[in-house]
Length: 481
Image (cartoon, rainbow, N blue to C red; front, top):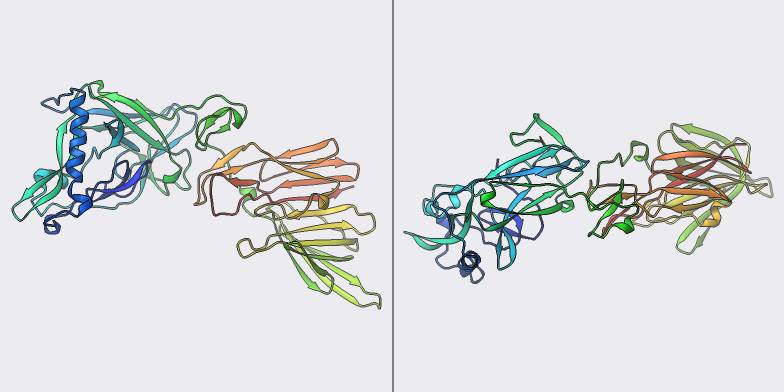
């Protein structure tokens, strides 16, 4: 399998003609016809400096290389309750072997291209192939997957060729049996897409596939080992037990299903019912008056509903206002709901309609609508797109109140905006309340009649993001007497 970019923490370096994220910055090996007669200042001393560092690390610990290498089985055991995915684009199985260099764990390529070895550096004909289709392996709960490290260290060096000198290359050394090494495993609990390949069989265990691997959302764990062990086993670490996120102390950890985790356990978010957000728009032929309120534009009019049209989950109410000289002014309001939801409005009902528009170039169609009975003031419908925060004020929802949950109930690693968290929304009236997961609705009997409440899709992104956050679209409507 060819090599391309993988993730795994640390800073990026171009090493030996391949790109990999590790801890040190190596310089790209050049083919013989590209070899400069002198290294640039930043390259000239570095390979020898790294070699010196590795030598100091070994000598100070009094470790000796055996005459023959001892292979080590690198094994992942998924002891968690959720599947994990690892990147196998380079056959690395999400695993990096690391050696201590002056107290710092430093990764090296334990599967080098043969062309990069010093005994091949002057040949000229040998070429390493870059790139390749991104591949990954899914390891289900209770499953194991493994590969073998041949027990050979790769140490940066230089070789002299007949046509030049200073050719960067790798010297090989059999790993000392008693030296302590580190095995770094990086994995994710969710991927935005995964297509099984060749029946899903992977020769090391697990299910082979391809798709988009979210490198920036990886969780990494470490395991110390010695070559004489023969086998080193690692896997996801089960987080501490928790009741709320406040119980979690690890970096980026959240409380899901009673366990702290910095990743996203398997869950069914985003739900199909929340795939289509709420939208609000109007058409005005004199029905509305318009005025600025802060940064918003507010459209308001009082009249009657002349007809109501439903197209799937989209409501269109046509409106009429009669002026003092019997002038007829018309308009309409359109509200689209997620599939399976639609608010009833009665024909000929007297209504006051208020539409608040906070749209900007960065957040277009940022609107909300409130429809009330023009005689009694009773709330008939409130719908808020709420991208980047609520559009309506609390007074617009009276006699109801809305509260956003503080503890995430699910998360998703897909997309380019970072980790997306999902929250409940609670609707209340006096002592009565209903708490809803994203993509769900429920009815509640109140003194004013039966109302239905919808938490269309309550989400926010953790960390820094340029995407709109939070997004908390919701709707309330009178469903019956």
